[in-house]
Image (cartoon, rainbow, N blue to C red; front, top):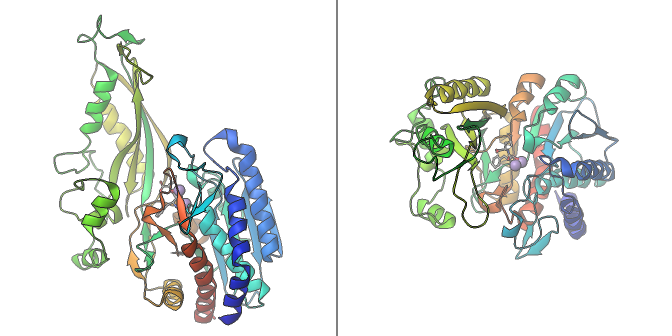
Amino acid sequence: MQVWADFQTQHKDRFLSELVDLLCIPSVSADSKYKGDVANCANAVKEHLLKAGCDKAEVCTTAGHPIVYGEKIIDPKLPTVLVYGHYDVQPADPLNLWDSPPFEPVIKDGKIFARGACDDKGQMFMHIKALETMVKTNNQPCNIKIMIEGEEEVGSTNLGLFLENNKERLKADIVLVSDTSMISMEHPSIESGLRGLAYMEVEVTGPNRDLHSGVYGGAVANPATILCQLIASMHDENNHITIPGFYDKVLILSDTEREAINKAPFSIEDYKQELGINEVWGEKGYTTLERTGIRPTLEVNGIWGGYIGEGAKTVLPSKANAKISMRLVPNQNSDEIAELFKKHFEKIAPANVQVKVTAHHGGEAVVTPTDSIAYKAAAQAIKTTFGKDPIPTRGGGSIPIIALFEKTLGLKTVLLGFGLDNDNIHSPNEKYDVFNFYKGIETIPYFHKYFADAVK
Ligand code: BES
Ligand code: MN
Ligand code: MN
């Protein structure tokens, strides 16, 4: 629509500089040191919602970090879209691997580098600027509610309760989220599923104190060695996970569904080169796209114990620890899987050590239908602004709250993401292409239009 395009061209530079300002706020939800910054970021988002034209916008406090909520209702008879995103970001460590400081955004070669540039400030901000476009041009096709949380990166622990307590306020026809990625700008795609998650922590304890590794080594079980053995034993020679019952509820896809997944453009050679690996790895019998899209996994996210300082220290550590997460697929249940893991880990632990297993956050997998009105509206919006039909893909990441939108609010979700897999989300040098940022702002209003037209 010309009025939208004109407005966006006119305000292009401001949109980008406002995003830069938002990226300067270190809203790291995992680290309590940044609590004040997270709160400041929530306020900044609220101000942006008001500036974009929301009638109401509010910072809602929770037991954790606040949720920002705003709405622009134009006609109660029109359909309503609930936009969801998050303003919190992952920790930036290790800082020394960044080419420029994570909270001092730099625009270089058409990319904006900063923690949160893509995940998810850059993407959620597109919705605020799209809203501003629609409001300021008097061309808003439906009612818009917008909820931006501050705890996505720590498992959305308080958002579930917020949904329970705000069912009326959050009433809508669909949830729209930009927090996923596309194959490429040449191959626009829409993720039609996300994996679930069960996140565990284990502690293996041997002797009651760190020991001299010469005096005791060879005679006392080393918890670090035992931990490595336990972890290694959780994959078999085919890279299947060995936890009993782990695959019991895994939804098996039909050959046709698997073929569709493998039709997405993907070059294994480019993939290896891009990652600097000689070979891919994974569960026997599945392609790389299937391994990340439709199969569950178990990964060590962190492992420590003993001496890791400068030089050498001969020590047999008393404890060794690991953080281990499992990505889940329909119809696995994260609590059940966490329990299976715990039981199994406790069972395989040898008598010479003690183990402690704790479950962190989790969430369920989701599949978003590709034959719904909402998916079709998203596909049509992409067709309009990219000139190509999007390819449906299965994403490997997780957004735990999406399953609760359905369970608590009865709402389906459309994942209209504009990130790229090489955006380095959660890694050093996170970036978002300025092109993608503008393309998202351009595409989103069309989703609202096509969705409203189809529902009305
Ligand atoms: N935006 C990501 C999830 C994502 C990334 C989905 C790329 C699809 C493609 C989200 O912010 C995220 O990082 N989620 C976490 C889970 C959360 C409970 C910490 C994840 O996937 O590890
Ligand atoms: Mn995200
Ligand atoms: Mn993330």
